[in-house]
Image (cartoon, rainbow, N blue to C red):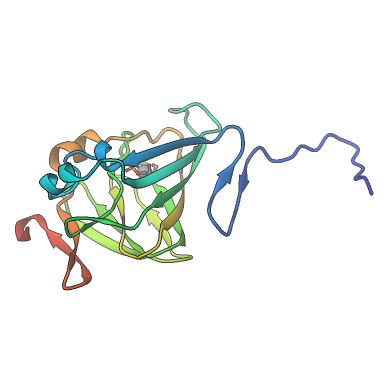
Length: 195
Ligand code: F6R
Ligand code: ZN
């Protein structure tokens, strides 16, 4: 039977598959990061450089319903970090501070196992375990990066302010103060002084 409404009701522009975290819709943007795009991100640049470069490390879907930089709007993302390592360092995102420094973000894990690595402006590090259903509030002024410590893909959704922006330069120049390495078969967060 046909639905009857006394005013126009539209279908949502975007569909989020709540089991897989995938976004579908005309306005969804997709980007991929391959090993060749991640120069100087991993500790062992020699090993990274010796790979073919075509290994997919992570991909991001984004829904940006308002202009970037607009105050008061919200963006939504779906990120997938693939399983793998460069030498003994887990595949991970580049990581960033927000350009508009004091803007927060939510991450929540849809599937897989990993670690959210958080670094404040004084380079203090902490990490939160990611597993299906884990919800992570990333406060403003805190850099964030995700590493996949499992054997399958790690999928997480995110929601952040449309005026947050991304500052990758700070991390390109100074990195995070700790790295997530596999040591004796287990993930270990090693500070820069211990590397
Ligand atoms: C947005 C956000 C995520 C990341 C994505 C990829 O503020 O934190 O959507 O952008 O997980 O990581 P980066 O941007 O560090 O390459
Ligand atoms: Zn962010």
